[in-house]
Length: 217
Image 1 (cartoon, rainbow, N blue to C red):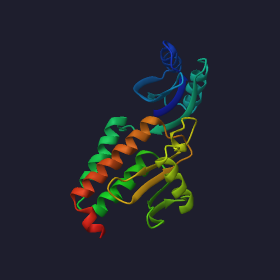
Image 2: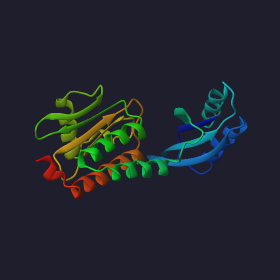
Image 3: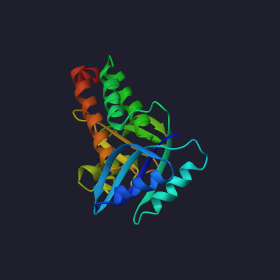
Image 4: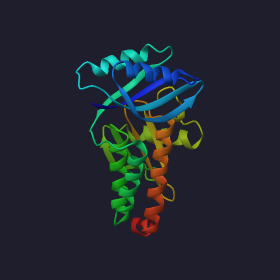
């Protein structure tokens, strides 16, 4: 059974080795590791772990990780056997955007990739100048909330940059009046926010090259 585990642990020598030992003790095998965030002496790591095909394997490995002082499990998800590593999935998302034939198709590809790659429960594309949504997926907050959230981001008071557990992001799409905002119950970590920002910039540059401004008018 292949799983993706998101854990937090003290950012100190030997702690990750102790976590790996606990995983090995329940016959788990770490085959991938990405550091999502390091802040104030705490690291948020994402592990890809092979576990025995046993109904109790996930509970056992979670208990083992929690045996390490200061370590905990934020999320565990079972993966398909052919699951890609994180870098490949982000590159795949960028490739899907760049394969679009029109500006509208590229924007649609961006929202589709963000929803899938980051497991969002809602996503909205808003035109802040017109104070209206251009596209909505899921149960998005009201436009007034999105506008206030985006304004906070522009002023440097973006609550989504807080690393205590925010599951919401907001990104202005450069060279347009549009902003994309989305969320999920689980926290969106620093590396994920960087990946979202990169995909938004890639899309903005591509749609501009395709004539977005002429198309939009």
